[in-house]
Length: 426
Ligand code: SAJ
Image 1 (cartoon, helix red, strand yellow):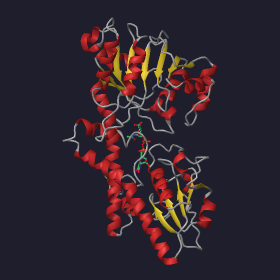
Image 2: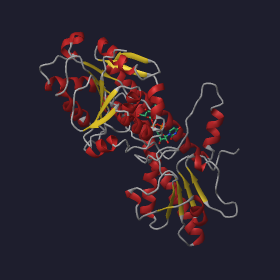
Image 3: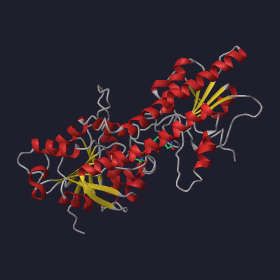
Image 4: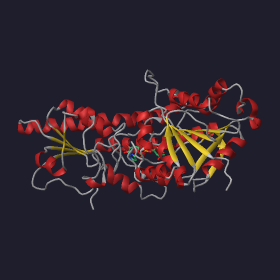
């Protein structure tokens, strides 16, 4: 097959960029990974990874050994550039405005090696208008080339937005099986980008314009955030009304058109707790529900902390002694080792500060505690923690915690934020 994509360049070898690079390389496509972090470049070139993702290490080793994947810190020519760099909040922003500085730096870094006929795709989750902004930066850097904003279908460079939608922990499979939204700055841009993704994607690749594609990604994560907020709000209401929220949700979900998600200690990760703010930032007057959902979910850790403080106070009043507190789970969601933006980690760090020397942590997916807990809590086994615990706080519904380990012969006060050990009989 004579592909117009001899070389594909992934800009940013992070949680999205590296698995994406690997998926193209596994199809025998020549892939270059560009990253500003030389340690990451060297790691990948040794056939290793800096990311924990099932199957990734093996795939990097094989594709590097086969000569299909190579990393570099110096931009070089390619036929398609996929930009997958972080889009966090502005650190000085009170209103959660998006920070496009990584996108800008990545865009300007590849501008010098662009040639007529190249495709540039923004994959990073972005506010509406970011792809057009990227095109404007490229045009600034390369006045000798033409771009879609001025030359439409005749432009030298094709530009598109194709948001990633993979679930951490399932990256390699979802990169192939998920449908992709392909938002072109023009129809020809979308068509060219679709041809690229079709080399690896088995799901549908659906063409639209770049602004709709940007909003679609933000909408997906906001939809989930609003639905989780509904479950979290129900958990607060049920506590006040003395109703078991998990039983309530199980029953309500028997309705054929009701599908309520699960309450928890808050919403973590680097996507769902961030992306809705991009919509709020661009349409503050209109995005009322989306903003409130963020506030409900962000408020949940405080509520859990208040429950633990209450359990501690009750134990102390009854026994005259401070309780030992066993916390189950630190990850931001079940069955992964990812602690980024984890509400469980926030809660445990606050507890370790409030009750020095009294907090134990059970987290089967990590070997050492993160910096915020080093020397302030102990990472121990479930059995060891429960042998001493007076208060147990369940924060993550890891499979390893599915069987209730609480001893029958000793009373331990339980704060169960996931309904794993209370409220799910049978
Ligand atoms: N959570 C609950 N209750 C639930 C479901 C989730 O409290 O019923 C919590 C989790 O514990 C976690 C947070 O929400 O703290 C987010 O977890 P998640 O599994 O919902 O999502 P992420 O952040 O791992 O990945 C999401 C996905 N988006 C959607 O499902 C719409 C994924 O497909 C995206 O690719 C990813 O964001 C992203 O990169 O944007």
